[in-house]
Structure formats: structure tokens, C-alpha cells
Image (tube, rainbow, N blue to C red; front, top):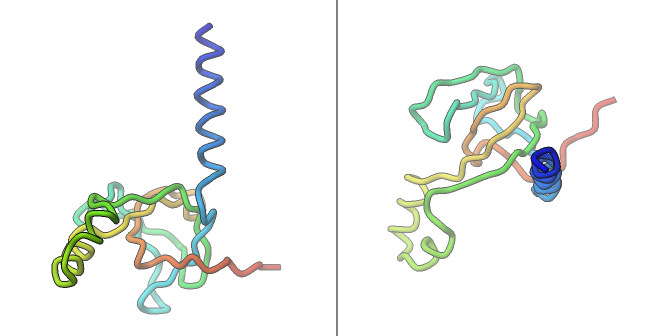
Amino acid sequence: MRYLLLLSFVFASLMAEEQIQPREFTVKLIKRCESLALSVEPNRKAKKIYTRVWTEECVQNLGCLREVTQKELDEMNATRRSYMAWKYPVWCKVDADGQRGWVRKQFLSDEPCKQTD
């Protein structure tokens, strides 16, 4: 019975991972010479994981979150909404060449990844 329960959890998590859209992000850093730095936690002050992923390269999307909901943002005036969007950015957990961590969504683009030959 335990084995069946464990198997159902694994299957459910695999199915949930399949539904995350987009599956990949294209990295959009401020400077072309920068590499993507991931955070251990979705927090600006968290320890960094340095990668060898550069602008225009792809990372796998493992899911995104924000501490404030879109509904709450929509109910605010423009000034407050702008401040709250800055204070509580969207964080996405990504896999960057085997290294997993969190990055602010502002450094990722939903545009399709370029195919490399």
C-alpha cells in the first residue's frame, strides 16, 4: 500500500511538472558579459550559485511564485502596485545546466529558446 501511495505521488509530481508553461526561459541579462547567478532561496539576500549560463541561453522552468497575488496588485493604485511589484518580484526556480536555484523573472524571457546545432 505504501509503495502504491509513493508511486502515485511521484506520478502526480511528474504530471504537474509537465504542465508548467513555458517549459524553458531564454536568459536576458543586463550586460552580455554577465553570467546567470541563481539564489539558493527566492530572496535577494540569499546565497548565490554562479553558473556558466549567459544571455540568450536557455534554462528549464521549474515554477514561479510571488508573495503578492495578481488580484491584490490589480486592486492597488498605480504607485502602490509599482512599489509592491518591485518589493515582491516574481521568482522562478530554474535548472541551469544541472544547477538548480531561484532567479528573478525580470532576467528571463518567455520567448522560445534558440535551437543549437
